[in-house]
Image 1 (cartoon, one colour):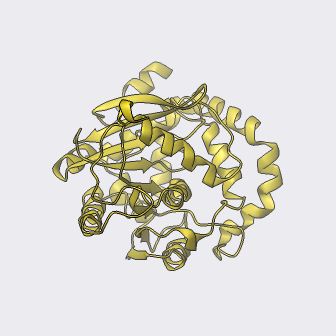
Image 2: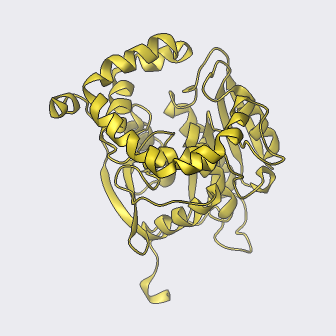
Image 3: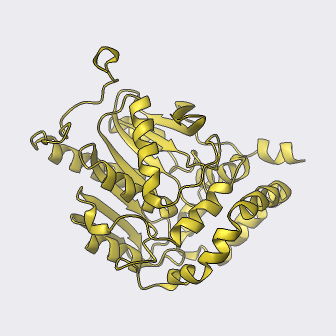
Length: 328
């Protein structure tokens, strides 16, 4: 029964999938879409999620715009090794190692919802390599001077429990998803009917539904969800104003999962923020239209191409190329 249910749910078509070593005995899983020689965009899934949590028709949209989109799985989900970070910023060196392993020098980063904090962490960690960052309904900080005034501050009260249950909850989620697999379709339909009213246009898209269900059911290891929740309740390890690359924030004004205050707050706090709101749109406001998001990435990439090479490393106009084995 489990096999029949999952067999009917097809994932988005990736050009290639794989894993790369980022530390001794530790790998990150990824899926690639778009142009094989295009400018790279690293795409970070939400919470929960995995490497196929990408917009419908992302492959075609990326191909047409000359982008190579690489969707990355965080530790504890899909093909990525399980690992416990102490802070959000600790993910950035792993992404740097992945970029090196894939021969990527310059890139943009995009994060959906719970992938937003990791997007900003990478942008802060590698300003000489990150062309720009995009947040799609991105979660904001709940601690420190950057904390967003929102119900999400309650996560601070839950922090001790999240830490104690981090590993048990992750394992429990795996078992719950396994048992609930035959009921995935009706559960999704109930969510779309009662909670996702503002997102109904995209929730009713068969491709989006197939992506969402496949990604959740076949991810295999959902410990990343427990890790994310625990880390969201901590200080991220950096301040928003330390993110100096251009950041475009897309947020739906009817988002009931990550309130719009998160988008306004982060766009105002980063050094070079741009806010794009969608009236009447929900949590998937930016995610639902990959073409518009990638068009803005392309515009900023073109603007930054004219900038001079920085003193600290490669400039925005340096092409992606594999590392030279004779220059190590």
